[in-house]
Image (cartoon, rainbow, N blue to C red):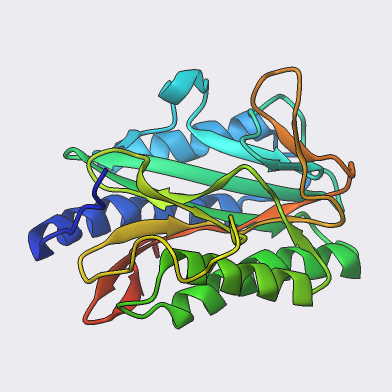
Length: 252
């Protein structure tokens, strides 16, 4: 399947959908406090998204039951909101999607609850720093595999490893489009595969494990943890390639 090249009016619509994602994530960030439940946070974000005239695109997607992926501590991605109430020292990831007038938005953050350990601070920083480093390195004409390799090297230089079997992706009129963008080089040749072009819109989302890249899906069929059983982190932005470089669409 060909990777879509978006015209400026389409990028404008994608920016509008993604701005709502950014606003919802900021709302959750400032309300991440000891005692609040994951279901309360999910409802808060859904109410905000709908108040902006958008739909929470994750709700019902592939059967996911909620508006927000709430990934707590050892859960790296796709956590289902529960009645669990946040406690001091927890680490919580939020991943949110929206649909506005047929165009999709998607982004994620990982947030500390109160005071966390230095190790957990480094874990969260790895995901965030990898994301912004990769966005800054994007140039028209580079290959997606080169971008994946850059992220893998950055993550490993921080002493962590990328989660395998899950990846970033194209986005537009569907929540997930071509290409798939792993956070590691899949194969041996970074000079293979499609090139990044102006007009492409895609999501980068570093998913960080501490020791083992192997994913395990828990009994609820959604929560993804590392085989090492340790805490993880996740950050994501939707970007558009404009005038040869990446511009973040998913800021509040």
